Length: 375
Image 1: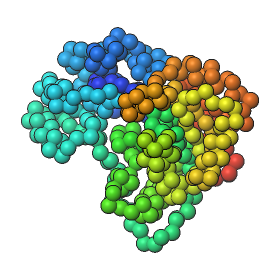
Image 2: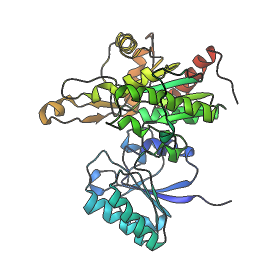
Image 3: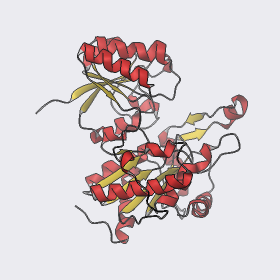
Image 4: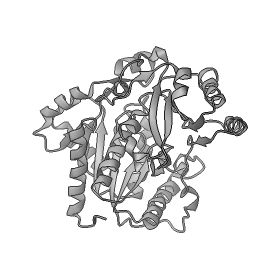
């Protein structure tokens, strides 16, 4: 049996924690080192500190050069914290290559930089894998012959969020892991560009193409999901929707919830999980949210998730930037107890029991439709 490649992650941050919490979804690597810049305040702490969820059991280092001795491959990832590419990231990529380490890049890079890195890696005799742009092989196979919506016969789960930083990717991976464990065959469209690395489809690049009309994006996404259904014959399709569902205000627009609207026109979901930013919600707020989505997007919410993130309105008004405050996930679970009598189910995906409950509720609801059969 061939041992998995030992993997170093840099710069480790909130972007990677969902993958780390569900590392069983990728089979190629053994994650051996997590490195973050010393100034970020993570050094010597458990990896769970970045998303303020439960401990993960791996300690974060700040010594990149020393950590290279402990890995075969270095994965360079995007960050919520600003980090200079030319002076920091690029130099560390080249340091890793000189140390004869394979490179996996999840950063979105210009084509010239990609070519340069491919050349250096080839010269040094190491592998270079780039996942910074959409790798979706079905992107180029979509054709539109008429302006009609094709029926999707497979049960569909939507994962939508009020905005960014709402634990959507954590929900997507948790559902994938737990529903697959129950024996169901899943096809999935995720909200990040490197989902192929985890065994499913990235959000298609044509949805970001300004040269394609919004009408055609709806039709193409419909055909895209239909193509997945035909090719993969899954029991369930999970679709993560990037961005938010509506603007916060005239300044923070969430791109007006365009992706959510377009996808809701392209595919009808059978089960919907809506993840909210943390606020001190009243019990009736969830029914109001559910009705809002019904009138805006045409579907009700089956399960709510409260993210352990709050929008920082004070900083937003003072500095005119979008900013968030992280909250300990245990506090979310405690707060959710006040919603126990609520008509709607309200969960915390960073709580393992809630994650199991979310998957089980989804399967129970889909089985009611009698169109999901176990493999």
